Structure formats: structure tokens, C-alpha cells
Image (cartoon, rainbow, N blue to C red; front, side):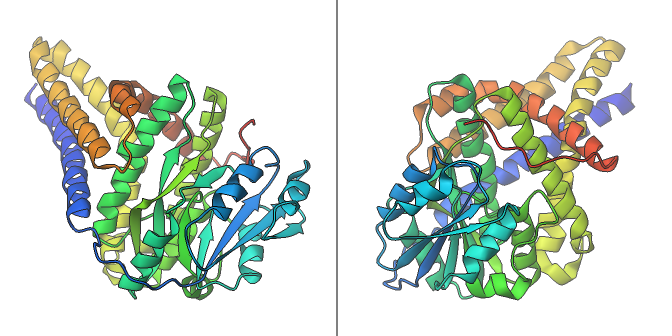
Length: 386
């Protein structure tokens, strides 16, 4: 009986500890934000890889044309679309448009880079719209830190009047972006996201450009840049509003690609795991992501041990107290995380209790993805329905 209780509280302490560490690091991010502004505006090349995005590409390009920044160019690379993406993009003024056979997003990005003239490469997904003031904070980051190889922007969800959209909006704010804040304090943001990823062109060339051997080219190039000794930070003021899956089916497809891509990248760079040669990235960054791959099993284990504790001890209050404490800390983290966000949305606060059930659903997808990757089930890159 005591062994079960010890196991129960060990899992609770580990889970709660991770949440508390994230909270303190995110607060540290806001306290240590760069406050001085420079008047240095390096040329930024914005690259938009697009495949069958005729319905979204116009709004994306319009948002880029409206950016408040004195020195940038826009390049669209059509990756062999079957619709009118190329024709629609070609009608937009001040945009360089290139077309290639369908070879995938990484090759499209590399194609765009080969035609670029900027010091900084900013990748933007074709279903994403940038905030007018997104570029200056990024340029300021690079100007203030010569060791910087990349900057991750703040990805937000385009607002739609659906429950799934609201839950994903809360997830992005309290999960994805909050984690990046903590990583940024250490200079080791582990993913520069496709919707708004700023990379120093020198760093891209140094690591051999984007690779197409995983489902997560953004994660892969991030790790490669960190591996070469560059730092990577997060800039919450660089806002990007992106489309998210509108159905459960599309959400499952997206997350399977994310999770399997993450596993592929971690396996590809397994030599970094607990390797002091790579500093904080090797000792903390990579191991923490490996922990994320087994976290779903811990979460399920927590539920099973809770039930076992109740059955063996007959004291439901013991397990109820532990679970309540963990959920309480998670809820506080969520509230504080939303409060620290620029332009917080009220609907996200209301969605916080639903994240408990949503995260259990995502845990199921993670377990499925891990299983598929282990037994090497083939998977295609599937786009969401427009």
C-alpha cells in the first residue's frame, strides 16, 4: 500500500514540478524582456511556401504588404499546386513568385532562400496573417544579440465561432507559447514555428538549409542551428494569426504529423541527448522533449495509480487531494499565462477547464503516433480541408 502511495505522489510531484518551473521561467521572460529599441533594420526576406492555398494566399500576402518595416521583400514559392495558387499570388504587386514541381515544403523554402537577398529569412505559412508590427521586434532581437541564430514569433489562432477553435486558442497561449517563453530565457527555444520563424541566413547556410527527411522541418532546422552553438529566442510581440484544424479529423492529422515529426527529429539528433558538448540544449532542451514523448504514459499512469490507490487504501480523499492540487496548479498556470500574453482573449480563460479533457485527447494521439513511428507505419503529409 505504501509503495502505491509513494508512486502516486512521485508522479504528482514530477508533473506539478514541471508546471511550476514553466510558470517561473515564463514570468522571468516578461521581467527580462529587451526594452531598448535599436534603429537597425536589416533586410528581411519573407518566404511563403504554398501548396493548394488559392483561398488563403491573398489575405496572407496583403498582411505582409501592410507590414510596418522599411526594408523587406516578399517571395512566394508555389509547390506544384493543383489549384490557382500560382495565378492568384502572381496578381499581387510587389511579390516575387516562383513555381516548382511538387517536392514538399522544405524544398520550397530552400528554393525561396536561393532567390533571397535579405540577412534574415522569415518563413510564413500561406494560411497565416502577420500583425502590422511583427517585424521590428524581431529585428531588434537580432540587433541586441550577435549569438542569435533564430527567433520564434508568437503564433495565435485566427478567431472563429467554434468550440474547437476556442480550445486551440487557449492551448496555443497557455501551452505552446508559454513553453517557448521559458525556453527563451535559456536561449534554447526548441521550435521556430512555420507560421512565423525568423532565421539568420548565415545560420541557415551554416547548417545546410532545410531538410526533407522528417515531418517537422521547422523543428529539425531549429535543432541544427542550436547544435552549431547559436542561441534562439522567442518574441511575443511578433504576432502571427494562423488557421487551425476545423474538425477533429484534421486535428488528428495535424498532430500526428507534429508528434511523429518530433520523434523523427529527436532520433536524428539523438547524439545530443545529455551531451554536455551542446550545453543547455543537450542537458535540458532535448531531454525535456524526450520527457514529453513519455508524458502521456505518465498521465495515464497517474489515473491508473489514482484508481489503484482508491481501491487498495479505500481512501478516495488521498488521491483526490493529489489530483486537485495538480489541477489547481495547472489552472493557476493557465490564468497567469494568459494574463502575460499580449492581446489576451477573454474566451481563452473560459476554455481553461476544457483543456483538461482536450489534453487527454492529445495524449491519445501522442501514444498512437509513438506506436506508429516505432513500427514504421508509412504516413503522407495530409493538408487540412479548406
